[in-house]
Length: 70
Image (tube, rainbow, N blue to C red; front, top):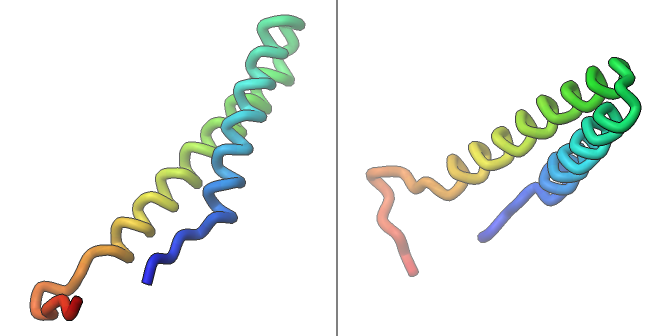
């Protein structure tokens, strides 16, 4: 059974996109507010993506004493 949490994937990459957009807005306007918001959203996006990948890897690892019945 394959299970992925698509909600976390969508939120993570969406925040990554928003963070990059806010950092580009900072470059254009030199507003410190955009730098702070962009940095926070990038950090949260990276944390969510790493968490989802770790959860997915631990889900697919089999127990050492269990044999695969395929």
